[in-house]
Length: 169
Image (cartoon, rainbow, N blue to C red):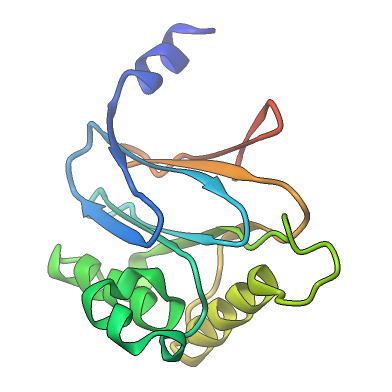
């Protein structure tokens, strides 16, 4: 492992748990979320303001549990994604500066495709972004693998780890 990689790994990790989100403008931070199966991590990076945000949402629509959505809006794509953008705007970010990436939405434990939660999570994400005229800069979605994603605030580097491999997104 090179010196730069070691330095990056020792950055201040901000763990984004399932059904949660985080935003930060501290350049020494790295946002990380683990074990994305059917869940989606939406990563936002503003290179102008050196700010980053990440959500790890579990389900596409809050109508599945309106009471839960009131207390944990980041569990759901339709309530959590707008909240993530709103929190980034509170840091002074502008929509036109944001680099947007998506990870997850796999089909891990639903071999027969009965629930299709991963696919539905991806669909809701695309619909919300499309309605708001936001393009994805990169994505690693679908398939049958679990993923971990790290977003470095310093420069927006986004690393996706899965099955022993780590790639830049």
